[in-house]
Structures are given as structure tokens and as C-alpha cells.
Length: 255
Image (cartoon, rainbow, N blue to C red; front, side):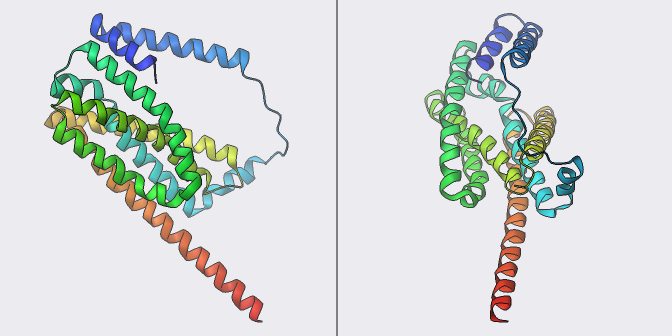
């Protein structure tokens, strides 16, 4: 994120998109080999059967969380995928300046990881509910001030922070729905987060082709609205179950 994206963008601008993709593939291959060689195998203290893990898929609260995560990631990557193109066409800056902005974005994402962990620790539900509104506000700023280079540096900084916060929130939202199967939940986060990236990038590309580069902001905003719907649905279900459980406990104690 910090180094790879700016370098890849620079290679694409200096040579060709094909060379940039080759560089991207080589870096991923090196990372893969490094993981195989140097990341140790962690012993499992308590084994969960496949059936026990798959049984969590019956929980409605999990599917509400999954759809929220799909739309959050679609909202993020439906716009971010075309960030370099947006800066080139709308902000009208050089390839070197675009690379610099992407470096700022990457460094900001490191800060965002810390921010995400902190706000989730303090008030997880409020953080998740607020997130689509915060990212939506950034998209509005990009739309209104995208032609101005100096403000875009600040906006990119905020955007990068929220980018990483979104990853934290997505992982938490699925993991908290099925705490009894944390490893399986992490797999679901990766799978459906990637599905959201694919959907967002594809729809963002369709909007771009039909209505121009600025329309990717509209695509991202529509996905944010969908994510809000599923976040609130999950909150409503969770609150109802919690109240019902507390009521049942009171009745049992009175009996």
C-alpha cells in the first residue's frame, strides 16, 4: 500500500500498464514465497470440526454482517480503484505528483490502522454506524474540490485513514457476529471482502464508462447507502435479541 501502489502507478505512467502489472505480479510472487518460508505454522489449541464452523452460516446476523461488508468494500474500491485516473483527469496533475499523493494515501492508511483499532475499542457499534457517513463526506469533498490540488492533498490524507479504518471495521463486523468460530470468520471476511472489491471495481468501471470519471463517486455513495441499510438491520436484530434475552432472565429470576 505504501510503496507498491505509487511505484506501480509510476511504472504505468513511465512505460506501460503491462509493465506495471508484471511488476505487481512479481511482487506478489515474492510475498507468497516469503510467507511460505518465514511465517511459522501456528499450533491449534482447540480444534473445531468443519460442521461446527459451517453451522454459523445458519445465523441471520452473520449474513447481515456479510452483506454490510460486501457493500462497504464495494464503496471503498469502487472509487479507490480509479483514484489515479481521477487525479489525472479531474485534478490535472502529473504522474509524479499522482505517485506522491498515493504515497500520502499509503502512509495515511498506516495511521488508519491505529485509528481503527482505537475507535473500535472505545465504541464499536457507534464506529461502524458512523463509518459510511464519514467516507461519504470524503467523497462529497472529492467531488466539490477535486479540481484543486492543495485541498486534494488533505482530502487524500483523510481518505487514506478511512480506507484502513474500513478494513478494520469490516473484519470486526463479521468476527463479532460469530465469535465462536474466529478463524472461519476471518476466512469469510477475506472472501466476501474480496467479492465486494470485485463488485465495486466492476460497477465503478461501468459508471465511469457510461457517465465519466466523476460518476465513480456516485457508485461509491450508492454502495455506502446499501451498507448503512444492512448495518442498521443487524443492529436492530442484535438489540431486539439482547432485550428479549434480558427480559427472559428477569422473568426467570422473578419465578
